[in-house]
Length: 19
Image (spheres, rainbow, N blue to C red):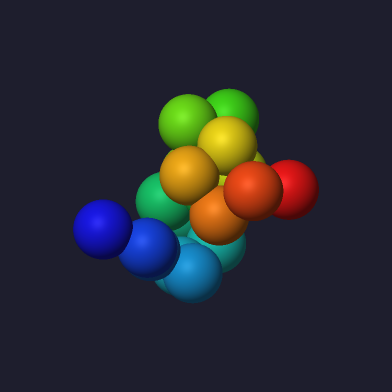
């Protein structure tokens, strides 16, 4: 579930990617 869409950029997404 790695969404690189600017609209989907959320803290959870960053944590999931490991940023």
